Amino acid sequence: MIITRFAPSPTGFMHVGGVRTAIFAWAFARKHGGRFILRIEDTDKEREVAGSIEHIIESLRWLGITWDEGPDIGGPHGPYLQSQRLETYKRYAQILIERGYAYPDPYTEDELEGFRLLAEAEKRPFLYRDHRPHNPGAWDGTQPLRFRVPEVKRYTWTDLVRGELSAGEEALDDFILIKSDGYPTYNFAHIVDDLEMGVTHIMRGEEFISSTPKFLSLYEALGITPPEMATLPVILGPDGKKKLSKRDGAKDVLDYRREGYAPEAIVNFLALLGWHPEDESEVMSAAELAEKFDISRVQKAGAKFDDVKLAWMNHEHLKRLSDDEFMGRLTILMDERGAEMPRYATRALPLLRERAQTLGNAIESLTGGEFAFFEEATPSKDLLLAGAKADAEAVRKNLTVLIEILDDISERAWSGESVKEQVFPFATEVGRSAVLWPMRVTLSGREKSPDPFTLAALLGKEVTKQRLTKAIELL
Image 1 (cartoon, rainbow, N blue to C red):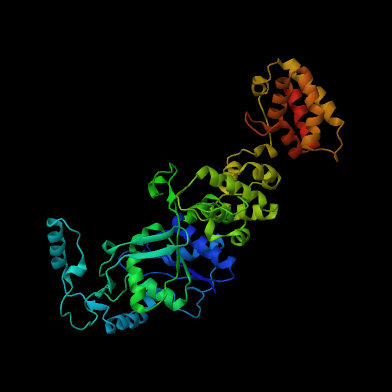
Image 2: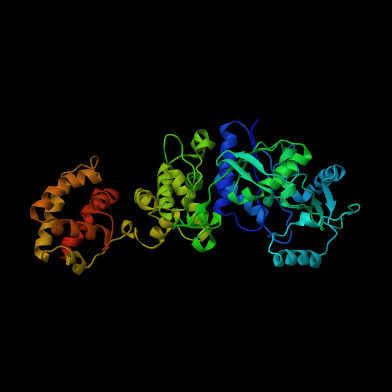
C-alpha cells in the first residue's frame, strides 16, 4: 500500500509551498488507494509558535485535504506529534550506538567555533568528521548525540521527478541526531518516523536534495530501504525569477478564506503549479484532481505564482456553486466581517455570480451600494442627458416610444434577451446613445452600472416601466 505524509513544523502560518506539498502527497495517496498521514514535526521548541498546530489543522480542513492518521484523529502509528515520540528516537539512537554509528559530542560551542575558524584560515571546508573524538565515552543524554557517517563515498539515487541525482563526499558529515535538550533533529526524526509509519513515498522541496546523502547514509546504518522521493519544483514569485516570499505577496492560506476565495480553487490552482494532467484540463474539483494525478507529469522547472490566474480560477469555481451554496458561503463571510446582508441580495445574485471574482468582491458590491438600484433609482436630469447626445425633448420622446415597445413583451417572455431584441432596432434607428444611455441611467440611477437589458431583466417589466415613466416626468 502506498503511504504518504505531510509533516509541517508549527513555526508559523501555512504558506502556499507547504500547502502544495500536502496536496501532492494527498492526491498521490488517494489516486492509488493508499493512506495519507498528517504528522507534526514540533521538535524545534525555540521556533515553535503558539497556536500553529491548530492553525495547520484548520487550514487543511478548510481546503478539504483529509488524512487517515493524525494528531487529531489518532491511528495505529501514533502519537503524531514528534515531541511525544522521544522514547522512540532514543530507542533507535541506542541501536546506532550499539552498531558504532553514533557517539556523544564532547565539544563546547567555543571549541566548535575554533575548529570552524581554523578551517576558514586554511581555506578548506569545515567537517566535523575531521574532529571525531577518539574516546567519546557513553552517552548520558546531556550531550548532543552525533551520527558517525559509516562510509565517505559518492551517493547516487533516483528521484521520481528529477531522475538520477548524485552527490559526493562533500555532502557527507557527522550530524546531530539528538540535541542536548533531548529533542531529535529533523535529519534523524523524520527517518525514524517514516520507517515506523510505513511511509513509501516522500514529497519534498528541492532544499532537501543537498541533505539526501546524509539521509541515505543513515538509512544504510539502520539497514532499511529508503522510501521513494519526489522533489517538487519551487514556486516562483510573480516575476518568475526567484522563490515566492512574503515580500512577493506569499500569504497565510487562511488569508484567502478571509478574502472570499473558494477552497476548491486554492487546491486546484496550487496543484497546477508544477503539474498538469494528461488531458490539459484546468478547472477541477479535488476528486477530479486526485483521479488524474500522475507523479510523472510533475515538472522540474519552477512554477510562477500568478494572482490573475488564481482570481480567474476562483471565479470559475464560484460559478460551479449552486445559488444556495453561493449565498450560504457569502452569508458566513459577511457575518465574519460584521456586514449586513441587503434585502436585495438574492435578486442581485445573478450579477454577483457573473461579476465577482471572490466572495470578498461580492460583499464590496453589496455593501458599497453598487446594487442599490434594486431598492431605488433617482437619476438627475443632468445625468439622464449627460451621455445621451440629444436634448431633453428628444430623450423624452425616445423613452415614451420605449415604454410602448416594452409593453409588447409579455411577462412570461420577459428577459434580457427579449428586451434587447425589441429595443435594439429602435435604438439603432434613432441613435443608440439617445436611447440606451437614458434607459440604463433611468433603471440604475448611476453613471456606471450593468447594461440596460440586464437591468430590465432583473427589475422586471412593471418596475422597468414605472422608472421609465418617472424619467419622462422628470424631463
